[in-house]
Length: 376
Image (cartoon, rainbow, N blue to C red; front, side, top):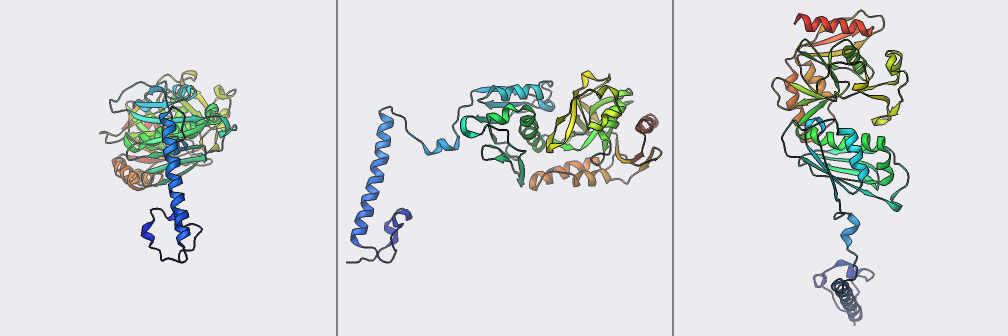
C-alpha cells in the first residue's frame, strides 16, 4: 500500500535519493530508517575507536587546517616585523636570505604568515607562476591545487600551502610567494608601493617614474655611481601618512635588465636569473658595487617622469600639479577598499614639483638632475 509522504519527516534530503518522491511505500520507509540507524551506529563505532585509543579519520584533516607548524622566525622587511610559522626549515632559510638584511625600525604588531609545506605525492616538479586574483580585500595566488596562497588584506589573515618542490626552488618561492605575500600585506596596512626608483643629493630626494624599459634602474644606479645616495632601483614604498612624504626602498640590492651589462662594466660577468612575471634580471648586492652612499628611507622633494628619446638633448619639462597622483593611481595594482585607501594616500604627491626628463644619454640625464637639486 502506498503512503503519502511529508518531506518534513526527513532530516536529510539524501535519504530520498533513488526513490521517486511521489511513490514511496511503507517498505521504502523502513529501509530508509534502517539506513539512518546504520549511519548512527557507524558514527558511534568511530567514537568508540577514539576512546579505545585507535586512530580515527577526521573530515577536517583534508583541509590541513590543524597541521602542525612548529618552526618560527621573525624578520623585518622594510623595517616592519613579521612572524613566519612553518613546518619546513627551507622557508625560514629563504626568508633569512630575502629579509635578513633589515632590522626592526617600526614598533607595530607583527604580521603573522602561515606557510605549510606538503611532500610526497603532492608534486615533484616546480609549478608554473601563480595566477593572481583579487576581489575587494580578498587576494589569491594559485599555481595549482597544491601551491597557493589566500590573503585577507583587510584583516591580515593569510595562509600559504606549497609543495616541497616549490620551496626547494628558492628563486621561484621567493619571487612568486614569499615576497609577494609579505609586500601585499604590508602594502595594505603600512605602505603604498610605487613603480619608481629613488635617489637623493644635497638633501633632496627624487622619485623617478617611467614606463617599463624607460631606464629607471639604470638612471638610479648611474646617479649612485656618481656620488648620489641610493634608496631604490624600481620599487619604492610610500610610508602611509608620512609628513613630509617619505619612501622606503631596497637599498641593500640592485636589479638590472641584461642590457645593463653594456652600460656598466662591473655587471659584465654577473649571472642572469628569472624574476617575477618571468622577466630575466641581474640581482646584485649593493655592497658589491661601486656605490658609497645608501639610505633605506628618503624624503620626496621632486618627482621625475622619464621619456627616453633617440638623439634628445637632456632637458626638464615642468608638469602640472596633480600629475604624479593621477599617474600613480592609474598604476595601482589593487581593488575595492584597498585601492580607495591607496588613492587617498597618493594625494600627498599632488603638490610635489613634477617634471618630465627627456634624455638619450644616461650621464647627461644625471647632470640635469644634479642641477635640479643644486638650484632648488
